[in-house]
Amino acid sequence: MHDAVVVGAGPNGLTAAVELARRGFSVAIFEARDTVGGGARTEELTLPGFRHDPCSAAHPLGINSPAFRALPLERYGLEWLHAELPMAHPFPDGSAAVLSRSVAETAASFGPHDAGAYRRLVEPFLGRWDTLARDFMSLPLTALPRDPVTLARFGLVGLPPSTWLMRRFRDERAKALFAGLVAHVIAPLDGFATGAIGLVFALAAHARGWPVARGGSQSVSDALAAYLKDLGGTVHTDYEVKRLDDLPPARAYIFDTSPTALARIAGLGRYYDGFRYGPGIFKIDYALDGPVPWTAKEPRVATTVQIGADKAEIGHALRAASREGRAPDKPFLITVQPSVADPTRAPEGKHVFWAYGHVPNGWTGDLTDAIERQLERFAPGFRDRVLARATAGPPELAARNANYVGGDIASGAVSGLQLLLRPKPSLFPYNTPHPAVFICSSATPPGPGVHGMSGHNAAKAVWRRLRAT
Image (cartoon, rainbow, N blue to C red; front, top):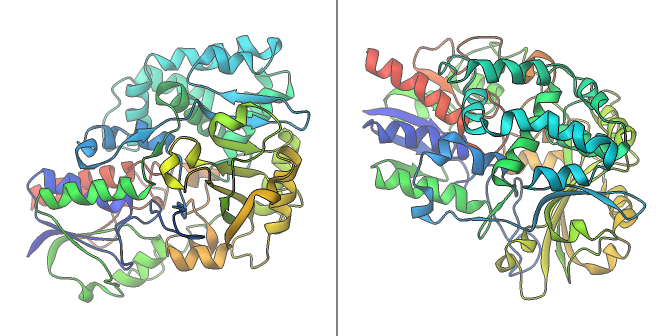
């Protein structure tokens, strides 16, 4: 009998397995796909030699993750690569704001009115970032806060809607960039605690950047899997689990799956019926004949580029997808150009690039033209660089990764109380009504992103139970 069996080999499932194996428990992991990775995989989606990340590509939370930083993943091939800038946000007039490792450079890109306001916003937290990140990403009660005063101060700034926080800024440049940061988790700008989302992404960039993994996001998953095997754990792929009886006997079962899938497999009935899924995305992976021809110079040297003319345009796009049930005419785009930092991702002189816009959950339309019209606004001639494209709307994304219900890559709406209390309001979100069954996916705190902290936190709940029995 195993001590623990993990279902799903995404970053959280792999991290949960590693944490248990490190503590001497026998662990096996079962994955339905033919490779580990979940939301951190790399594939040749377009043309031979072009290595794309079907989902996550830039990893501000990965490089800053307390869980990953405690593991020897570099020994197993994980190497973080940085472009000159972590992120840029171009504007229609050919200028751009930036999110740089340097607070001063970032503040200067906002203009004189907002430079001081931005420095005053972030500087109180930068010197305590590692402790703050550990406290913030370990909530709820998986660990006592190491610095409760800084965490409380962060909460006072971050718990109100981001629209309140943005009142500190006078000019559009800072507002648009910050609105874009909030939109990374597909959250409405006026939602509860959305200020904290934007602030976390900004602080992460200043602390360690927004890197890509050499060779692609698959490197993150492969490093976790290799370490797990060295610890004595086993990994089984091409193994679909439809019910608990499909799994070998174990003292605990940990699911890196959606709550609805867990309820179906473990026979939990309607336990998660109140869990809400959020908007989906429409994503395009491109093979390009050269770099994206950005008008502004800053995006040419950035890993991530946000596309939204101003705060109002970004807000309209988010409302259309999340509240109005329609695809926006001018979608807000998150784009990543991994080959700017890692030229090995494409043949010499070529580039890989992806972009996505938000759409209603389960949407079945085609956003390709709207996305490329947006790109042409900020990079005229973009279409001329396209060698091949691979499109994926909500149905295709859900088919690739069962956790992306309706194309929701956040594994659940990041709005209202569900932003913090997910998948149900509980101080023990990793537990289920079945005493031997736990959940560790991005549907649990601290939520979406390739950081492994949901798996890390769930593993704590599991090993406390295993030691008590």
